[in-house]
Image (cartoon, rainbow, N blue to C red; front, side, top):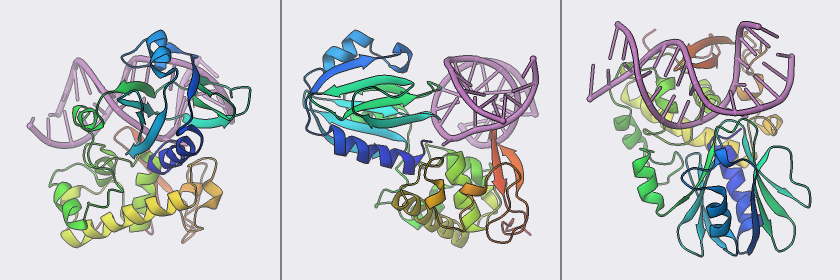
Length: 268
DNA sequence: CGTTATGTTCGATG
DNA sequence: GCATCGAACATAAC
Protein backbone atom coordinates (compact mmCIF):
# COMPACT_ATOMS: atom_id res chain seq x y z
CA UNK A 1 0.00 0.00 0.00
CA UNK A 2 2.30 2.63 1.20
CA UNK A 3 2.96 5.59 -1.00
CA UNK A 4 2.51 9.14 0.20
CA UNK A 5 -1.30 9.10 0.47
CA UNK A 6 -1.25 5.79 2.31
CA UNK A 7 1.43 6.90 4.74
CA UNK A 8 -0.52 10.10 5.34
CA UNK A 9 -3.45 7.93 6.42
CA UNK A 10 -1.10 6.00 8.71
CA UNK A 11 0.10 9.30 10.15
CA UNK A 12 -3.46 10.22 11.02
CA UNK A 13 -3.99 6.82 12.59
CA UNK A 14 -0.87 7.30 14.69
CA UNK A 15 -1.96 10.80 15.63
CA UNK A 16 -5.40 9.65 16.66
CA UNK A 17 -4.47 6.52 18.60
CA UNK A 18 -0.86 7.01 19.58
CA UNK A 19 -0.31 10.63 20.58
CA UNK A 20 -0.06 11.57 24.23
CA UNK A 21 -0.76 8.06 25.45
CA UNK A 22 1.81 6.32 27.63
CA UNK A 23 3.37 3.34 25.90
CA UNK A 24 2.99 0.50 28.37
CA UNK A 25 4.62 -2.29 26.41
CA UNK A 26 6.33 -2.90 23.08
CA UNK A 27 6.49 -6.38 21.56
CA UNK A 28 8.78 -7.08 18.62
CA UNK A 29 7.38 -9.94 16.58
CA UNK A 30 10.28 -10.06 14.15
CA UNK A 31 13.63 -8.43 14.86
CA UNK A 32 14.50 -8.15 11.17
CA UNK A 33 12.21 -5.16 10.83
CA UNK A 34 14.34 -3.16 13.28
CA UNK A 35 17.24 -1.10 11.96
CA UNK A 36 20.19 -0.23 14.15
CA UNK A 37 18.65 -1.45 17.38
CA UNK A 38 17.94 -4.84 18.94
CA UNK A 39 14.48 -5.83 20.20
CA UNK A 40 15.34 -5.43 23.87
CA UNK A 41 16.88 -2.01 23.36
CA UNK A 42 13.98 -0.89 21.21
CA UNK A 43 11.35 -2.06 23.69
CA UNK A 44 13.05 -0.59 26.72
CA UNK A 45 13.59 2.73 24.95
CA UNK A 46 9.90 3.11 24.17
CA UNK A 47 8.47 1.64 27.33
CA UNK A 48 6.97 4.42 29.41
CA UNK A 49 7.56 6.91 26.59
CA UNK A 50 5.05 9.28 25.02
CA UNK A 51 4.71 10.27 21.37
CA UNK A 52 4.25 14.02 21.15
CA UNK A 53 3.80 14.82 17.48
CA UNK A 54 3.81 13.12 14.11
CA UNK A 55 5.44 14.04 10.88
CA UNK A 56 5.32 12.43 7.46
CA UNK A 57 8.01 13.02 4.90
CA UNK A 58 7.50 11.20 1.62
CA UNK A 59 6.85 7.60 2.57
CA UNK A 60 8.48 7.98 6.00
CA UNK A 61 6.48 8.39 9.20
CA UNK A 62 8.14 9.99 12.23
CA UNK A 63 6.88 10.46 15.77
CA UNK A 64 8.70 12.73 18.23
CA UNK A 65 9.36 11.04 21.57
CA UNK A 66 9.05 12.64 24.98
CA UNK A 67 12.32 10.93 25.90
CA UNK A 68 14.00 12.63 22.96
CA UNK A 69 14.57 11.67 19.35
CA UNK A 70 12.01 10.17 17.00
CA UNK A 71 10.44 6.86 16.16
CA UNK A 72 10.65 6.17 12.42
CA UNK A 73 8.47 3.75 10.51
CA UNK A 74 8.84 2.90 6.83
CA UNK A 75 6.29 0.56 5.32
CA UNK A 76 7.92 -1.03 2.30
CA UNK A 77 5.44 -2.48 -0.15
CA UNK A 78 3.08 -4.24 2.24
CA UNK A 79 3.23 -2.29 5.49
CA UNK A 80 0.26 -0.97 7.45
CA UNK A 81 -0.49 0.66 10.78
CA UNK A 82 -3.61 -0.72 12.40
CA UNK A 83 -5.41 -0.06 15.67
CA UNK A 84 -6.67 -3.15 17.50
CA UNK A 85 -8.48 -3.93 20.72
CA UNK A 86 -6.96 -7.09 22.16
CA UNK A 87 -5.56 -9.49 19.56
CA UNK A 88 -2.95 -8.06 17.19
CA UNK A 89 -3.65 -8.57 13.46
CA UNK A 90 -1.76 -11.13 11.39
CA UNK A 91 1.82 -10.20 10.48
CA UNK A 92 2.08 -7.66 13.27
CA UNK A 93 5.86 -7.20 13.41
CA UNK A 94 5.82 -4.62 16.19
CA UNK A 95 2.99 -4.15 18.67
CA UNK A 96 2.66 -0.94 20.68
CA UNK A 97 0.43 -1.41 23.72
CA UNK A 98 -0.85 1.54 25.70
CA UNK A 99 -2.38 1.50 29.16
CA UNK A 100 -5.73 0.66 27.59
CA UNK A 101 -7.04 -0.24 24.12
CA UNK A 102 -7.00 0.57 21.32
CA UNK A 103 -3.40 -0.42 20.77
CA UNK A 104 -1.40 -0.09 17.56
CA UNK A 105 0.24 -2.70 15.35
CA UNK A 106 2.87 -2.19 12.66
CA UNK A 107 1.89 -4.86 10.17
CA UNK A 108 4.11 -5.94 7.28
CA UNK A 109 3.75 -9.19 5.36
CA UNK A 110 6.87 -8.93 3.24
CA UNK A 111 9.13 -7.28 5.79
CA UNK A 112 10.58 -4.87 3.27
CA UNK A 113 10.14 -1.82 5.48
CA UNK A 114 12.00 -0.88 8.62
CA UNK A 115 11.57 0.73 12.02
CA UNK A 116 14.28 2.74 13.73
CA UNK A 117 14.99 5.25 16.47
CA UNK A 118 16.49 8.39 14.95
CA UNK A 119 17.99 11.36 16.71
CA UNK A 120 17.21 14.03 14.16
CA UNK A 121 14.76 13.99 11.27
CA UNK A 122 16.63 16.45 9.06
CA UNK A 123 19.92 14.59 9.43
CA UNK A 124 18.21 11.31 8.73
CA UNK A 125 16.61 12.61 5.53
CA UNK A 126 19.92 14.08 4.43
CA UNK A 127 21.83 10.86 5.05
CA UNK A 128 19.28 8.85 3.09
CA UNK A 129 19.28 11.47 0.34
CA UNK A 130 15.54 11.90 0.53
CA UNK A 131 14.35 14.95 -1.37
CA UNK A 132 11.56 17.37 -0.42
CA UNK A 133 8.14 15.97 0.38
CA UNK A 134 5.88 16.06 -2.64
CA UNK A 135 3.22 17.99 -0.72
CA UNK A 136 5.64 20.49 0.83
CA UNK A 137 3.85 23.85 0.46
CA UNK A 138 7.16 25.54 -0.20
CA UNK A 139 7.63 23.72 -3.50
CA UNK A 140 6.69 25.55 -6.67
CA UNK A 141 6.15 24.55 -10.30
CA UNK A 142 9.25 26.59 -11.12
CA UNK A 143 11.31 24.60 -8.64
CA UNK A 144 10.06 21.31 -10.08
CA UNK A 145 10.74 22.36 -13.66
CA UNK A 146 14.32 23.11 -12.68
CA UNK A 147 14.78 20.03 -10.46
CA UNK A 148 13.74 17.59 -13.19
CA UNK A 149 16.96 18.29 -15.00
CA UNK A 150 17.91 17.50 -18.58
CA UNK A 151 18.84 13.85 -18.38
CA UNK A 152 17.79 11.02 -20.66
CA UNK A 153 15.95 9.07 -18.03
CA UNK A 154 12.20 8.56 -18.36
CA UNK A 155 9.73 10.80 -16.59
CA UNK A 156 8.32 7.78 -14.73
CA UNK A 157 11.74 6.94 -13.30
CA UNK A 158 12.21 10.57 -12.29
CA UNK A 159 8.85 10.71 -10.49
CA UNK A 160 9.73 7.60 -8.48
CA UNK A 161 13.17 8.97 -7.56
CA UNK A 162 12.83 9.78 -3.85
CA UNK A 163 15.89 12.00 -3.92
CA UNK A 164 14.20 14.26 -6.47
CA UNK A 165 10.77 14.43 -4.84
CA UNK A 166 9.63 12.16 -2.04
CA UNK A 167 6.34 10.30 -1.90
CA UNK A 168 5.45 8.92 -5.32
CA UNK A 169 5.76 5.19 -5.99
CA UNK A 170 4.77 2.95 -8.85
CA UNK A 171 1.00 3.36 -8.48
CA UNK A 172 0.81 7.11 -8.04
CA UNK A 173 3.52 7.86 -10.57
CA UNK A 174 1.33 6.05 -13.11
CA UNK A 175 -1.72 7.94 -11.89
CA UNK A 176 0.00 11.31 -12.18
CA UNK A 177 1.19 10.57 -15.71
CA UNK A 178 -2.26 9.36 -16.68
CA UNK A 179 -3.94 12.52 -15.37
CA UNK A 180 -1.28 14.63 -17.07
CA UNK A 181 -1.71 12.79 -20.39
CA UNK A 182 1.98 11.91 -20.60
CA UNK A 183 3.46 8.57 -21.55
CA UNK A 184 5.65 7.09 -18.80
CA UNK A 185 8.59 6.39 -21.12
CA UNK A 186 9.08 9.98 -22.28
CA UNK A 187 12.60 11.20 -21.43
CA UNK A 188 12.60 14.24 -19.17
CA UNK A 189 14.65 16.07 -21.77
CA UNK A 190 11.58 16.04 -24.01
CA UNK A 191 9.49 18.03 -21.52
CA UNK A 192 9.43 21.78 -21.96
CA UNK A 193 8.89 24.19 -19.13
CA UNK A 194 5.11 24.56 -19.46
CA UNK A 195 4.72 20.76 -19.48
CA UNK A 196 6.90 20.43 -16.40
CA UNK A 197 4.90 23.00 -14.52
CA UNK A 198 1.66 21.36 -15.53
CA UNK A 199 3.02 18.02 -14.39
CA UNK A 200 3.89 19.47 -11.00
CA UNK A 201 0.36 20.78 -10.56
CA UNK A 202 -0.94 17.33 -11.48
CA UNK A 203 1.30 15.72 -8.84
CA UNK A 204 -0.18 17.99 -6.17
CA UNK A 205 -3.72 17.49 -7.36
CA UNK A 206 -3.51 13.70 -7.58
CA UNK A 207 -1.86 13.31 -4.17
CA UNK A 208 -4.28 15.71 -2.50
CA UNK A 209 -7.22 13.92 -4.08
CA UNK A 210 -5.94 10.53 -2.96
CA UNK A 211 -5.44 11.75 0.59
CA UNK A 212 -8.88 13.34 0.60
CA UNK A 213 -10.41 10.07 -0.58
CA UNK A 214 -8.66 8.25 2.24
CA UNK A 215 -7.04 6.31 -0.53
CA UNK A 216 -4.76 3.45 0.14
CA UNK A 217 -4.18 1.92 -3.26
CA UNK A 218 -5.78 -1.36 -2.39
CA UNK A 219 -8.42 -0.95 0.27
CA UNK A 220 -9.94 2.37 -0.64
CA UNK A 221 -9.41 2.30 -4.35
CA UNK A 222 -13.13 2.40 -5.05
CA UNK A 223 -13.36 5.82 -3.42
CA UNK A 224 -11.11 7.50 -5.97
CA UNK A 225 -12.66 9.68 -8.68
CA UNK A 226 -14.18 7.67 -11.55
CA UNK A 227 -11.62 8.88 -14.08
CA UNK A 228 -8.63 7.63 -12.07
CA UNK A 229 -6.39 4.98 -13.56
CA UNK A 230 -5.48 3.25 -10.31
CA UNK A 231 -8.59 1.05 -9.94
CA UNK A 232 -8.14 -0.16 -13.52
CA UNK A 233 -4.51 -1.22 -13.34
CA UNK A 234 -3.83 -4.86 -14.15
CA UNK A 235 -5.86 -7.77 -15.49
CA UNK A 236 -6.55 -6.34 -18.91
CA UNK A 237 -8.01 -3.11 -17.61
CA UNK A 238 -9.38 -0.40 -19.88
CA UNK A 239 -8.85 3.35 -19.83
CA UNK A 240 -11.51 4.98 -17.61
CA UNK A 241 -11.57 7.99 -19.93
CA UNK A 242 -11.76 6.45 -23.40
CA UNK A 243 -12.22 2.71 -22.94
CA UNK A 244 -9.14 1.66 -24.89
CA UNK A 245 -7.28 -1.34 -23.38
CA UNK A 246 -4.39 -0.23 -21.19
CA UNK A 247 -0.84 -0.85 -22.37
CA UNK A 248 2.16 -1.71 -20.21
CA UNK A 249 5.86 -1.02 -20.36
CA UNK A 250 8.65 -1.84 -17.94
CA UNK A 251 10.52 1.16 -16.51
CA UNK A 252 13.10 1.11 -13.75
CA UNK A 253 12.20 -2.50 -13.10
CA UNK A 254 8.54 -1.74 -12.46
CA UNK A 255 5.49 -2.29 -14.58
CA UNK A 256 3.83 0.86 -15.85
CA UNK A 257 0.23 0.95 -17.02
CA UNK A 258 -0.86 3.67 -19.39
CA UNK A 259 -3.50 4.53 -21.96
CA UNK A 260 -1.97 4.45 -25.45
CA UNK A 261 -4.64 6.84 -26.65
CA UNK A 262 -4.92 9.46 -23.87
CA UNK A 263 -1.25 9.60 -22.96
CA UNK A 264 1.13 11.21 -25.43
CA UNK A 265 4.76 11.65 -26.17
CA UNK A 266 5.15 15.44 -26.56
CA UNK A 267 7.63 14.80 -29.37
CA UNK A 268 4.78 13.33 -31.38
C1' DC B 1 6.83 -24.57 -10.54
C1' DG B 2 6.82 -19.75 -12.47
C1' DT B 3 5.16 -15.04 -12.18
C1' DT B 4 3.86 -11.03 -9.92
C1' DA B 5 3.28 -7.52 -6.19
C1' DT B 6 2.16 -0.26 -3.59
C1' DG B 7 9.98 -0.24 -2.01
C1' DT B 8 14.83 0.37 -1.57
C1' DT B 9 19.60 -0.74 -2.25
C1' DC B 10 23.66 -2.54 -4.34
C1' DG B 11 26.74 -4.27 -7.84
C1' DA B 12 27.43 -4.73 -12.69
C1' DT B 13 27.09 -2.69 -17.08
C1' DG B 14 26.60 0.68 -20.91
C1' DG C 1 29.37 10.94 -13.42
C1' DC C 2 24.89 9.38 -15.23
C1' DA C 3 21.49 6.03 -16.11
C1' DT C 4 19.72 1.37 -16.64
C1' DC C 5 19.29 -3.41 -15.40
C1' DG C 6 18.98 -7.41 -12.62
C1' DA C 7 19.20 -9.26 -8.28
C1' DA C 8 18.43 -9.22 -3.59
C1' DC C 9 15.54 -8.83 0.50
C1' DA C 10 10.74 -11.74 2.18
C1' DT C 11 6.11 -13.53 1.68
C1' DA C 12 1.71 -14.64 -0.38
C1' DA C 13 -1.40 -15.34 -4.12
C1' DC C 14 -2.61 -16.89 -8.56
